[in-house]
Image 1 (cartoon, rainbow over the protein chains, first blue to last red):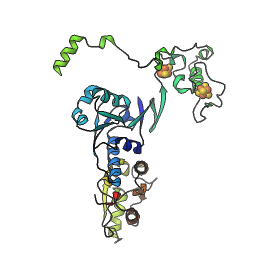
Image 2: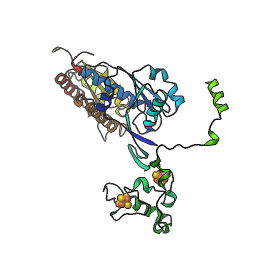
Image 3: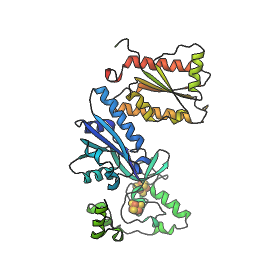
Image 4: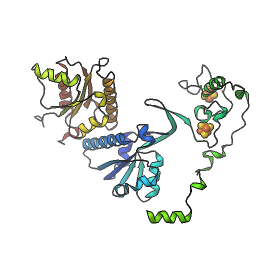
Length: 234
Length: 137
Ligand code: SF4
Ligand code: SF4
């Protein structure tokens, strides 16, 4: 899932300082699970901003609400009047949510309340770790199911590097060397031959190097005729 | 402003915290009347929003009184309560509000002194800091 973190409250307050009516919108999907932008977090943020304003003798109207998935227009549409009825929207979803609102209402200001961080998994309660950077050409079937692109500090394809020691990464001794983990996993799977195999340079054209990537499923797309029909229904 | 009574809210778990408060009242211990007690099933049930809401609605200080850690009726409830209080302190600090306005206390139901002592500490904090923003909510 997408893991995000709330921006520091002072930074958020500063962003919103010159706007009177603020709508804060959270999202019930990934950012709720990672405790950054779900219903509780929206309520807490609104409450903290109100308390801060009271201390500073400042007046602003805040309304907090939450949608099912902020990266999908259908859900955002349901709160359109709240968005357009405010001077600014603070998105407590990942940046995809913030950008969805921004694209739908380009004249309206939508600012991010979260710092969108990683594609990660919950390791234990309260801990999320990065496991993929979306390179667009997955190779983990050759690396014991462990992603060296995201988990190795140097994204090495033929690791470990010379700095790997005591299972720790030389770049950050707090972090396990990804290639130590890959070695162990391949050993467990009786596939250690793979670690000796030279992996050629990766084709990075599928990664973020060429600007925005768009994934399409032609069979799922609506035809012009179908789109027209949908417009009528809507 | 000097004769203004501080507004304090104390969230007490029903297993030990609230019982300790009742015992204090029965034993004739002085309990400041400006302290409102909110009984909750367990301090682990308390969420940051409950504590912040109390401050938002006009409380000067808020405290949580739960079971002694390691003797919690629900085993780890008061540990959860302490963590929530810790997080609210962090949020308050980020918002530029004194984090002493929120505290966690622990007691056994037989500790008649616990509630009055916690309340007195928070009254002292509230008097020292005054209402948030200096005025009445
Ligand atoms: S190899 Fe690429 S797609 Fe696969 S997990 Fe790593 S970054 Fe993600
Ligand atoms: S020590 Fe391991 S994880 Fe760190 S850079 Fe080298 S190979 Fe990658």
